[in-house]
Amino acid sequence: MSSYAEEIKRVTTHTLQEMKMRGEKISMLTAYDFSMAKIVDAAGIDAILVGDSASNVMAGYETTLPITLDQMIYHASSVVRGVSRALVVVDLPFGAYQGNSSEALRSTIRIMKESGAHAVKVEGGKEIRESVERILSSGVPVMGHLGLTPQSIYKFGTYVVRAKEEEEAARLIEDAKMLEACGCFAIVLEKIPAKLAKKVSESLKIPTIGIGAGAETDGQILVLHDMLGINKDFNPRFLRRYADVYEVMTQAIGNYVKDVRARDFPNQNESY
Ligand code: KIV
Image 1 (tube, protein in one colour):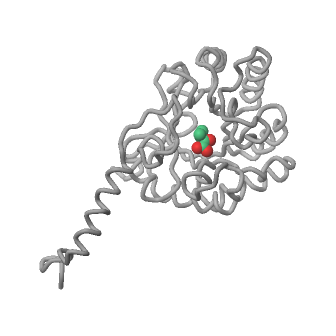
Image 2: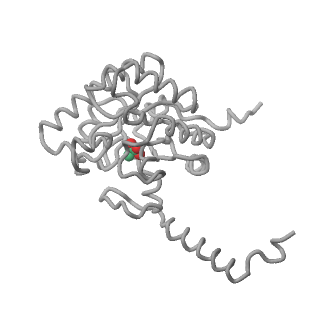
Image 3: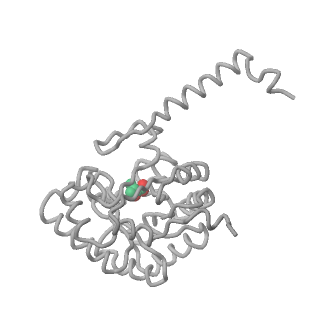
């Protein structure tokens, strides 16, 4: 007997761990809505992050700070409905876990219950240790995020590469080891030197997922709107554009506008 569930083998946190052990690279992208998530999943992605970058690319804010827990749950539940294979990880937004570990657990439980996602991601190291432990103790898988952590942009003051100096690099390595020891299933390394990312990846058993962290992390993640060329205003060195969807869409919409104005659309075959 073959069922839909048997045909599509879901990616779990264990799958990612096994991929690292086999030396297979992990592919991850962000998604924020049903239709895009469906396409990303169908294309064979291993994991999808419902990133708080939704604050930038979906809502048009300058930073990730304004997005709320309710808004993240809305995006996450839309993504989950579009996915049949990939692991779905959801960012705990700024303000939903920094207060204390009870708040972190409450926010996590809301995400898991109301969206149906599979795991959460949090930014930071030892300063959020208690929250990470509390979430993990409830049975929810946690992904860490170190290096350039956009929720702390006003502390950093700039989006430049992090941990170039020895002291910050040493702190990052310590934080990565601490997150692994707590039981995190993976860690995002954002915008750090490739040499440091390689060292961290080699010193951990859990997978690292890099963005602007070179080729030696166990996997890669990009923001969907950036790699598809929907958002053309963001051009960091680490970004590879795989399409020019902005161009494709403006062309298509422009043609539609032209056809409507010329009374060419709809034609007889497109009418009842
Ligand atoms: O919110 C996000 O999209 C992220 C990725 C850049 C890792 O955290």
